[in-house]
Amino acid sequence: MSHLTLLVDDDEAIRRLLTEYFDIMGLQTACASDGQEALELLDKLNPAVVVTDVDMPMMNGLDLIKALQERQTSIPVIAISGNFAHLVAADNLGAVSTFVKPLDLSGLVAEVKRLLG
Image 1 (cartoon, one colour):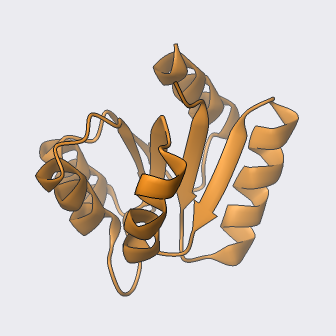
Image 2 (cartoon, helix red, strand yellow):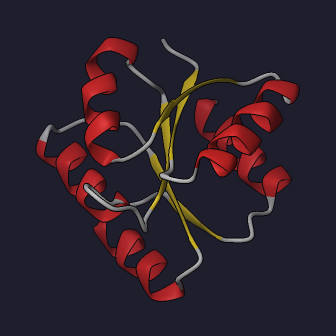
Image 3 (tube, one colour):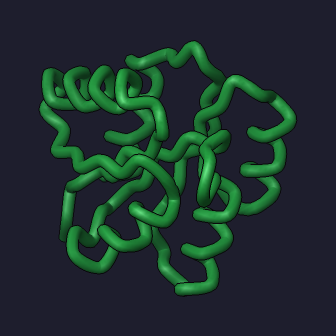
């Protein structure tokens, strides 16, 4: 089983921050800049967890969650956003957990580790 976490965010600085922090915490990551790129990487990488921003141009995090459900994947999705209403929508779509920006990095890593088992 993969222990890879796919980080999806349109903000390169956030992707870099998350990648560096996850690496320090001993977690493997790959990155995508939007939901469409994440879907393209999904089959190649077979991530165990997806952490996605909700607010992205092109394909947003809500559409990514819907697309994962349509593919009938069991990959848990953690949604992140600065917009509380968007997090509620992600929760309603089946995100296993949500985190508001600015992120609690240690809490996010703890949740990813919990999901990785």
